[in-house]
Image (cartoon, rainbow, N blue to C red):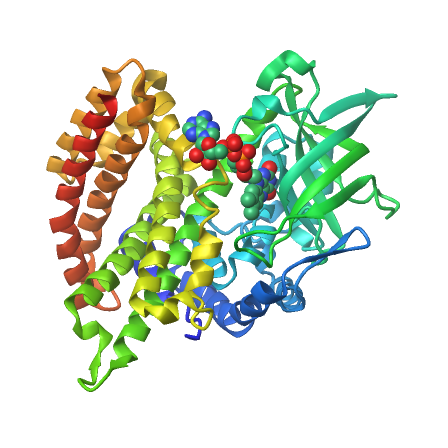
Length: 524
Ligand SMILES: Cc1cc2nc3c(=O)[nH]c(=O)nc-3n(C[C@H](O)[C@H](O)[C@H](O)COP(=O)(O)OP(=O)(O)OC[C@H]3O[C@@H](n4cnc5c(N)ncnc54)[C@H](O)[C@@H]3O)c2cc1C
């Protein structure tokens, strides 16, 4: 196994010199370096080693309670003891109020070291944002400090057997009994629906408070605690945990809510809109999972290819041009994606409702998750037969990463969001913000504008949505790589970055042309 090493210098380089984090009010570069490096040390010493054991050990359901792998439990203990759980939470509720861009750097390292643990722990900032935005004063005063304490984790409970991508089919019912809300129903696939990392869990549950035929308009968002104020367990139970391809250290739970006491969060009937506050945050987190997978896979492949000597020639694997191609490709994915997601996070810190952020969020989700899977696959190929074995754990990266294009909105749905709402809504304000953002790369901007007009001229853009998304990802990459090239002298390895930037500059126009052709074919 290749020891985990957080790419601290690479992360700080793009954060400061490409994403422009120093534009953020109060940004302190030295503090950022200290934070990222310190988390890198925890990830290398405790989280990554526990992840390997956690993948083998898996989660168990014993007497109705979930038992997590022991090493991940211990790693969470250190995570909380060092205060990492409160990094992104608002200061007024006991958090440290760090910018999303800096919290994102920590998330990337966390997900690369243990996607399984990160996804159980990582919903707290999104839950806190949702409560801070829609909760009453009393709800904010009660729940935000609890989430900041590390004694409560949060879940996002949307999916049901008949309601995955299409949440209009949610049947879990919210009922007012004696003036108090209660939840009845079943949810499936809930990450961290139960765990033994924290004594308490706060579930954010999407449930139907209107009649069965009310579609998404009848959905409201509820806070459903696992325990009452008297410390007693409430009727929220896990009925089974799923056997999965990867993420064995993360419990994916089927849950039963049986007249579970609940508090309405925000307005009745506004549940889906409110849930999007949590989901938009979670979507950028999922892109960071992809960045983490890509960076880790590229690092393992690079170190293996430099040291593996072949037969009598004694040549290292990376003496082969095709191996170098794969290494370049995996690293280009990792560096480009990281810069793209960091740019979106800096936008989020500057203005959460910026049209550009609206546009970049699905692009990051799509690009980050496809990129993580692609880089893991390339790394397996570089390692040959050893890549297919457990020993170097690149096969685990692929198994863990494979869910990311599916959850937090399947990638096909994000492609439809781009092709539909974001091109057309509010006179295409989000799309125009993206077009303006492409101004530093005029040829790319022109090609993207042509594709945009082609999509707008089509009555039914569905068939072309993924081709258009891929073209958009390539256009965004073109903008990102122009920035990376311009900042190369600040990179940890400027020569390497110049090489990768030149490669990207040669490849991306061809990719854009290819996706434009595919778009024509798909639209017929
Ligand atoms: C490990 C894991 C963890 C999860 N964690 C959570 C969690 O914490 N909370 C939670 O609520 N859920 C969670 N989920 C559920 C996950 O979000 C759903 O699986 C996902 O939303 C897809 O729903 P589905 O599985 O019902 O697939 P379906 O809705 O049946 O979709 C199947 C496929 O059809 C395509 N598709 C469907 N609809 C469209 C459309 N409108 N446009 C284009 N293509 C479409 C997509 O390719 C999709 O992959 C988790 C799932 C897994 C496996």
